[in-house]
Image 1 (cartoon, one colour):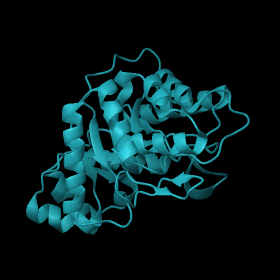
Image 2 (cartoon, rainbow, N blue to C red; image 1 turned 120 degrees about the vertical axis):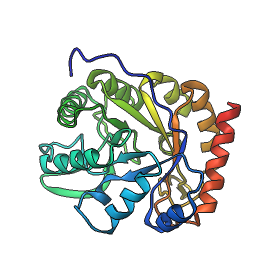
Image 3 (cartoon, rainbow, N blue to C red; image 1 turned 60 degrees about the horizontal axis):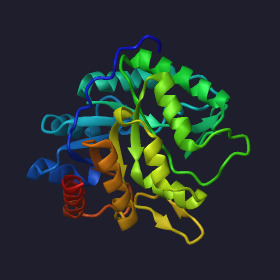
Length: 278
């Protein structure tokens, strides 16, 4: 995009959770003190059925945001226009506060790796992603948020570090950032960088959402699994992020080994308290 308007004021939704089927009935029956929910967009792209039935009911009570895993913004293949049409249709239905996906690629030449793969941090890759983000934003009629992914490999071709790459994508494409605090921590351990250096490099006005999650420590490296509680070093990094970025909507991701909602509510309350004292 060129000659784009200034960024609007960042909305603050409060503290949310990822919406998961295991909690649908509890949410509808008990109306727990959750400020908003993030949905995985792909779970609701099929017209009709029980997922949309529940989504419509929950949407009538809580604000929603959409979070995708299939945009594959860094892939060499053309953007999937049918997927974008489905995404736009869902957005028209539920009116999310924003739409996000990942700064990654998920496959090439028609093959889906079913993983969020990091990009080489080169000028060529940067220009490629910026052009594709512009195309997506023009199609959807709104800015999107891109999330930093956790990574376990590096590319010898890289010409810059990850945080500079992310910052330049946001600036040149005029998009927003979903800053995943756990992913920063995971990658900092795996690659040996200071996570505070990462935080300090990201422009404050571009960050509209935080992710918090758990991971699995395998000794020589750690993997972003979303199946464990958030650990203390990630909470500490979140506290520093709040100090730098201010009031940013934050949520907890749990995708496996899903506990009762009460356990996630306790984690969410801890996030509230940390934000209040930071």
